[in-house]
Every structure is written in C-alpha cells, then in structure tokens.
Picture 1 (spheres, helix red, strand yellow):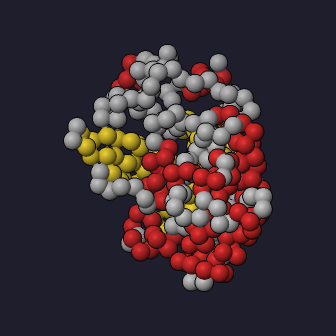
Picture 2: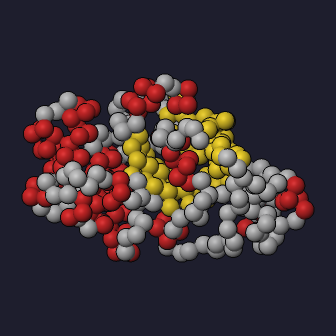
Picture 3: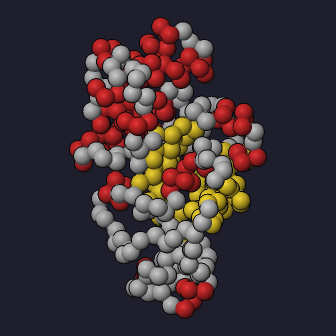
Length: 307
C-alpha cells in the first residue's frame, strides 16, 4: 500500500512528558467505509511509530490510504460512513480510539496538529489570515482580539512571511500558493504541538517553493523538537533519486484481491502471492544482519533486494 521511511534528528524529550515509548504508535489499524455498493477497505493493518524530533515519511500513490490513516489519527474521519473495526492509535502510550470526543479534542491542535494539502480550500476566504491564526489563541487560551492579533503576527514572522505586520489583515486569496502553505504551517504551530502531520504539504507548488516549504518544516521541527509525519505521493519530496514505481492502479477497495493486494500488478507474482498475505518482517542484509528500521511485506523481498 504505502512505503514508510524514517529519519531522526537528535531527540530530546518534551518537558511535560513522562512517557518513555514512541510519541505516536499506530498498531494494526484498519479503516473501512460502508457504502451502498459494499464495504470499501481503505486501510488494512497499518503499523508505524514516530518519536519526538523524528520524521516519518509515508509514501504511496493516490488512493493507497495515506490521508485516511492521518484522518483516523486526528479523529476527523467521517463516521459513518467510515469505521475503524480494528487497531490502536497510541499517543504517549494512551489509545486515542478509547478516548471520549472531549478527550480527543484536547489533544487535537494542542498535541497533534495537521497541515492539509490544499491551503486555499482549507482557509476561510471571507476571514483575514490574521483572524484565522488568532482564533487558535482566542479559543484555546482566551486571549483578547488585540493580543491574538499580536500572536498571529509573531507566527507569520516565524514562518517567514514578509511584512507580516502589514499583511496580517489580508485575505487568503491575496497570498501566493507558497505563502498560503506557510500560513497553514503557522496555524499548525500555533499551540506548539508535539506532533505535526503534513498531508501533501507541497502539492501544486513549483519545485523551488517546495524546497522552501520543506526546509521551513525541517527548521521548525528542530527548533520545537516535534515529531513530523510527512505524507506524500511524490518520492522526490523525500529522496534525491526516484524509486521504481509499480505499474497499474490501486485495487478496487470493494474487491481487494486475495493474498497480496499488489499481485495483479506485480510482474513477480506467483500462486503464493495470490493466496497468502505476506507477513511484515525485518529486512536483513545478505549476511543476515538486520537493517535497522526496515521491514517488508513481500514473499520475495530477499530476491528483490539481494538480486
């Protein structure tokens, strides 16, 4: 379904944490949508974890369940038709799926924030960016409109929007795509969360602006020691060299193939692939030594990696 890659800065625990495990851990997560035509299995047994100061890159083609997984973590999945029949989402060791709506609201924004891929549609077109940034402080910290505006300007400066004081009263359409994305990053940073989920943060931006946005995220991550989950279908965003892309399209989620879900598209598929779901196992070097952090769910990963 998706490829997961992890890189880490030097992690230092946040002051308010006494939890020694991963910042966020997703275990065997399943998400399905109940439609008139049947049950669409969008996410099937996803597992990953991310620590403070660490970057987790989730790569996959459109329709592979990347954003749905993020929405499940954030608790913003439309249910119904969405349903989470199985799995755990542990934030600092506590399963958010077992929390009340009120308990999850206290985490959302304050502890875990999300940057959405389409800044123009995510921002309210009839409210100034300063008002929208300030809302975080008015709602969560009870600041006055005047003080919230000061905070909004500080945030705009933080994400390097030129002439922030003069532009705080401008509307979303008055900013370029790259500047709007910086505003979305500022909104996510407003309450200094422990973890940010960036869902396709560079979509529709040119390569120069993409690099600027990614550099900004990395700089802010180091400053705040945040965990960062970067979701993208663009391998070039997280790697200098493009990887081989499997041909074809994702399967019909109403009729997921038996065995490995990739078997209709994989040139190396055998009868084993069509009947048995491959287990997720650690990847090892030719001498048998584990490659730290790497796992594969493929019956023939050894032949593929080692030739």
